[in-house]
Image (cartoon, rainbow, N blue to C red; front, side, top):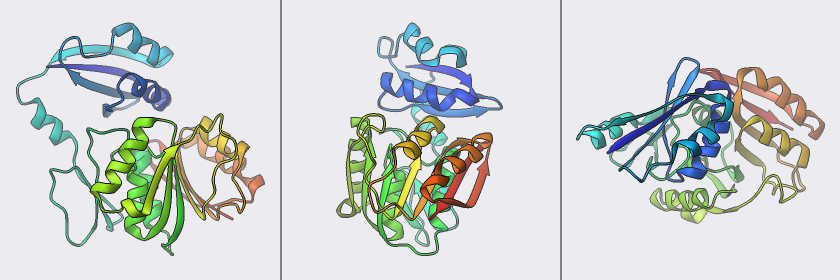
Length: 272
């Protein structure tokens, strides 16, 4: 078994990740080292992406690419990498092999499926803002759903129905599978949606959008169907990008209520 690791500059990491997921739709392992983010995939020789494809995906953000042989205990070490998370003393996000905690809302996300287990700072910040909303309930939209962790957590908190949108077929599938595993399939629907081509975005009173800055700017520019959302939780932003996003949504009547920061990333709670 081989471990193929690509290290990239932090400021471009999410853009690189989007490209990598085209090559490795099953997802990647992510770790941080200061200003460098490392994405790793595992596989037998011949199953891993080709070096030129990886270099093209990373572009100017590339720091290094390395391949190492993995010891026989790689599966256990991979499991050890994916630790459960406690969010705001309310939500317990865990991989399937961890036991639930009776006092917390249980969210099970398989890290082998796709795109966001809750461990990344941008997702953690979204979950914290979601858990802190004073009134849970009513319809919600998860825009760029990935694994569906935000949609599942919202359903567990009492929101619904929830529409999850993503342009990746694998993300739509993963969201539906995770909804079923968490016994909230009745509350969550998922479908493909391309922010760049499909026009105005379906609306809901609460919108969750863990997206990169260019995509959030696209959301502000394209706008929502009527009636407009009342609350937006936005993440996927570097610290210095927060003010620009707040300003972009101001013409739609949104104002910042809360801003959270963690490890160089920012999440925003905006309301109308």
